[in-house]
Length: 155
Image 1 (cartoon, one colour):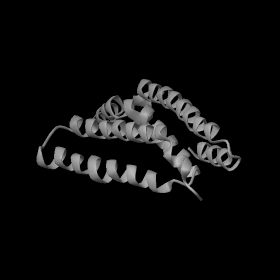
Image 2 (tube, rainbow, N blue to C red; image 1 turned 45 degrees about the vertical axis):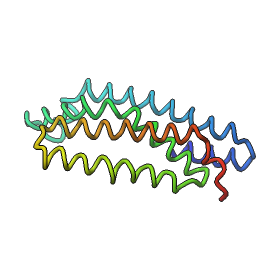
Image 3 (tube, rainbow, N blue to C red; image 1 turned 30 degrees about the vertical axis):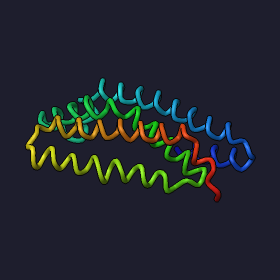
Image 4 (tube, rainbow, N blue to C red; image 1 turned 90 degrees about the vertical axis):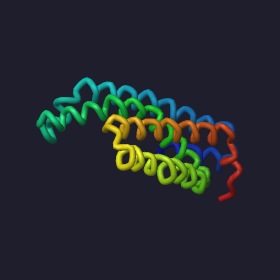
């Protein structure tokens, strides 16, 4: 994300708007691939990784469950983070704040509370809520970034 931010800002400063936007897409693509690779490793070696911190069977079960559900959304979460930072490099910090607030503060956290406290749903429902929040946030960042309006920001 920091590299995308720097590259977008440098290219905008040089007047290379298409290259600036392309930089974010390239960085997001690389991050997606990296995140998918890492979560595959984490899932494959879940027991020794989680067991390093707490080897109890309950913790191992919950940790593997979390990785199996939320971990699969980490690829798109990585895309969202990189595109957020790419927009920040263009000076469009408000866009990231609004998107993050909309999904975290007004969607994911309230839904997590509703699912766990009011509906009494199982833990898997909480993990699914978090994973869906990551997916929706990534979709919002992708659509907003594709519009390219952030390139017009005057710093």
